[in-house]
Each structure stands twice: as structure tokens, then as C-alpha cells.
Image: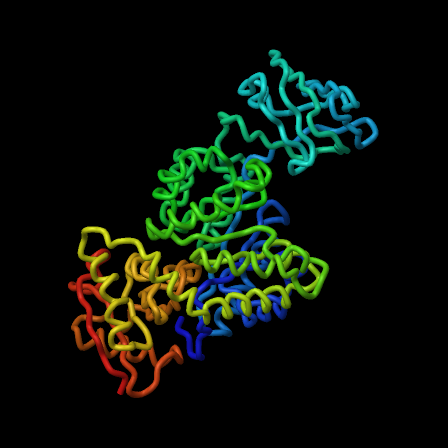
Length: 479
């Protein structure tokens, strides 16, 4: 799977969520042509049949366009909700008493079922419970064996099965429910490239998902719990990629803390060489409007300035009225930022120091040499993606062409900053330095990024075809 047409110069990637507004072949192809690099299948909604149909369309579009497209399966995670009410909803008055219990009876203005005994057992006096995406707040005043007595700190209307967030409590529940395990098995059999792991609290949550995936997909850990922020370094190290999931993170953290959390997560991911996606409400108004607000445009630009590998659209493309316009304007915002000299200098200035091993030294040197000789591209031979990831971490001034022998790795690299991935197959094995140079030049020309007389920098490993052996740099001229 190679790219036969000129490639978009945009370095920061775009993830687009599919849904009722974007399920046909024509729209999915149009989204890819407008700039979507990765498609997200949201397993909180839809059936397995729905996701399978969309997956098949993505792969057909991928073949038509001649470039790899990544697919993210985002599993739901443990959703915490209250029960139902006699009249479908109640109004909770600020300062009033309200009980959460295990009783099956329909709720009233005095009480409602909380079908999660683990919350009751883990809560303490003073714990906060946020309802309906944080619109209402309860403070625990007494903990019983089978109930919590609370005071309504922030009141409002509460209706059936609204969500519950518990920012102060580490819950003794796994990140994967039975539904998630079923969805995970289905998605892995389907052949998705990334698994989005929701509501992670502990490093053990990531380890469990990795064990299930068994290398069949990258684990993209969603940071959306304060407890995950407390264990961030370990969680990021165990993950293949990370998502700044600002929806639930914004509910459980104070609003003023979310921008700093976003920057902290991105900096750590950059330091550790892990791709990071910024998600949720980026162009929210475009669910019903053809253009974003100026604040939303600035939000996207900020993520790019922060050095995110990718930015994501959720309801904008899944259920919105203007999915193509949303991808188009996001691509234009990103491209405009990347033309800015300040952005380019920020990327260079924020480059982490190389670690003390050969592959990292080669990655750092490739960017420096590319700048010195004014190379048009860096061509990285990468068996499992590590070489391309290391070079991307350097944020070089020219595009990175990642050459890999299999389609799966090419697709996984679709979320990585600055990397244009090509699967070159194994029918033409690379055995000598001359083979490497010839294949690198061929790929650079096919990408549309170079022309006759241009220089390229080539990073590869000896012996060829051995993962983790990157130790060779060459500069070549396109004939």
C-alpha cells in the first residue's frame, strides 16, 4: 500500500469519528479526501454490524486512495449512572437532602437508585459526586452500608440514567467491563489499528488491555480521570499512544485546570515519544453551524502549538450537519499554524534531549542533517514503527516518510506527527545499502514530496529487517 499521489504537507494528523452522519461510502471517502487520517469507531454507540460495515468501507476507500488509513476502536469503559425516576425527572434544590441507594424503586426528589455499590463502599464524608456531566453536584454527608446521604451543593434537573462522576474517589473497578471485553474481541478480530481505552485510573488498567490485545493493535489510553493524572508517567510509558479526553476530564477537574493538564500530558508524551491526540469539543459549534467560533479555531491552533500529534473531531463528524466542512476547516487551521515561523521555532526549541542509545542518536542526527543540507524529506525504514516514532519526536523541519514491510504498521503510523507511511511489502527485500538508497528514492518520488536534484536523508538499520537495529544514516540525491 503506497501513496501514488502528492501527499498533504500537514504534519498534525486529524482523527474523525464516524456515526449516523458519516456512514456512507461517499461521505467516508470525502472525509478522507478532506484530510481525515484516522477514523474513530465509537463503541459507546451503534452495533457490531454498524462498525463492521464502516470498517469495510474504510478499507475500500483506503485501497481506492492508495494510502494507509488508521482505524481507532474506542471502547466505552465503565459508565456510572443513576437509576430512573417516577416521573422521568426531578428538580434537586440547592441545600436539600438527597439519598443515593441500592433500592430498585423509581426515584423521587428525596432519593434515587445508584446501581454501583462500589461507589457507596469507596465514598467518604466530603466526597463530591457530579451528575449529568457536572451540571449538578452532591456532597456526601453520611456513608451507610447500602446508601449515601448527600447535600445538594449545586442543584438542577436530574433525569433518568444520567451519568455520575466521582473525581475524589479511586474506584475498585477495572477499566474494561464485560461489554468492553466483547467489543475489544470483536474490534481486534476486525483488524483495527488502535484500541481507545476509556476511564483509566491505574497502570494496571493499561497492562490488562495490552495483554488482551497481544500486539494486534496499539493501545491508545484516554486520560479523563484525575486518578490517571496522578499516575500519568507510568500510564504513558505503558501506552502506545495517548488521548487527552477533555470531556470527562473537564467534568472531573476544575475548568481552569484542564488547559494546564492538556499541556502537561502533551509535554510528557513528547518526551517519551508517544503519539498524543487532543479530543473533545474542538469544533463543537459545527454540529449545527457551517463555521466554527473563533474560540474553537484558537483551541485547535493551541493544540498544534502545544505539539500534539493529532486533533480529533467527535460529534462534529459523527452526528453533525456539516461533517465535511468540519474536517476541511480543521485541516486549514492546522496548515495555517504550521506555516508560522513561531510554530516552527517552538517545535525545535521544545525538542527533548536524545536518550543514551544509538537509535535515538540516529533520530536526532537525521533532523539536524536534514536542516543542514536542506533535505526535502527524511526516509525512515521502520519494521515496527519505532524508528519513525523516534524521528517524529524530534519534530524535524521536513516531512518523514516511514517505510515499513506491512500494512498494519503503516496504518498505525497514521496518527504520528509528520509521518507519511508507506507499506512497501516484502516482495523486494532490502539487503544492501544500495537497495536502501534505491528504495528510499523511489518512495520519496512516489510521495510527491521531492523532485530531481533534491536531497533526502535516509535512516535505516544494519542488518536490515531486524527490529531495533537503526544505526545507519545516508544522504542521497534524487536523480
